[in-house]
Image: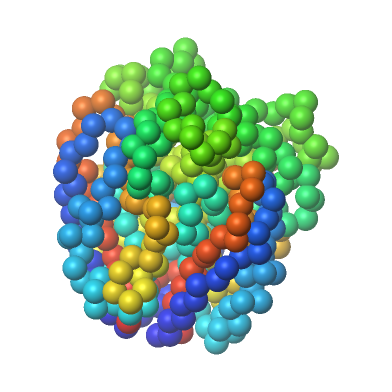
Length: 140
Length: 140
Length: 140
C-alpha cells in the first residue's frame, strides 16, 4: 500500500464555479503509480468548496451560481454574521451545502471519473486569495 | 492492508430517490474479508448522485424529490444550459448539492451503517440509462 | 499502513449547528501515530449530519440554521412523511443536503484543517438523544 500527501495552493478564481481538473492533475503525477486506490481532496476554507460536475458547457457553471445564489441569498434580514460583507454568510452556507472534500477512485494510474465529469473549485467570496487544498492518495 | 475495486453498472431507475443497498451489497462480497476499513462509492455522472437516508418508509423518498425539486426548479428564466431538456440543469445542481461519493465504514465484514440507513441512487433525469459506479474498499 | 476504527457516542446536542471538534479530537488520540493519512467520520443516523465550517463566530451557526430551515421548511402541504413530527421530514432532507461523512487529511499526527475550520454535528431534530459516529483512520 502506498500513500502520498501534498498541500497545494490553487490559482485564485473569481466568484462562481470554476473547472480546475487540469490544475490538480498536473500537481499529482504520483497518481500514475497507483493501480487501484482513491484520491481524497480537502479544501482548508469555510467560504469555498469542492464539487464534481459537467466539464463541457460553461453555461452549467453559470447556472449553478444562479441556483446557489437563489437558495443562499445575500442580505437576508435574519442574518447575524454580517461584519465580513454581504457575500460572507451565504459563502459559509454554500460551503456546507456543497462540501469540503472529494473522494475520487484511481484506476490504472488515472482519476477514474466519468467522461463528462470535472473537478470544480466553488469560490463563494467576491474577492478571494489563493485557496489551499490537501490531496491524499491511498492505493497500491 | 487489502484493497478491492470494482466498477458496477446499476439497474436503471426512475427519476427520484431510489433505495439500492441490496443491489450494491450483493455485488461486493469482498467486504466480508475486511475487519475494519472503509468502502467508498463514486458515481461517474453529473446528473445523478448518491446519498444515505431512511430505508423504511418510502414516503421519505417521495418527499425528498418534492423538496429538491422545490429548491432546484425546472424552467427558471435565468437558465442558459437548456438544450438537453428542462430536467437537465436542475439535475446538475442536485448532483452538486447531494454529492458524487459516499464513504461508509466497514466493521467485522459488513457496512457499518445505522439501523435505518440505506444507500440511495438519486436519479435526477426523466429518462436515464444505467449509471456506473466505482466501489473501492480499503481495510484489513 | 495503519488503521484504527472507533465507534463513539456523541454528547446530545440541541437542534442546530454545534461545534464538536474538541469532543472528537479527544476521543481519537491514535491520530498522533499517523504521519500522513486520512480520518473518515461517519454518522449512523438519517436526521443528523456532519459538516465543517467556521469555528469562531457562533452567529455563523445560528445563520446556518436559519438558512437550512428556509430551504427545508416544516409543514409543507405536500409532505407525506409526517407521523414522526413536523421536524422529521426536513431533518431527513437536511441530512441528505449536508451529508453523512467527512474525510479530513491527517498530517504530522494532527487533523490538517484550516485555521478557521471546525467539525460540526448538525442536529436536525427538536429532541435528539446521543448520536453515534464511526471514525476510521488510515495512514502511515
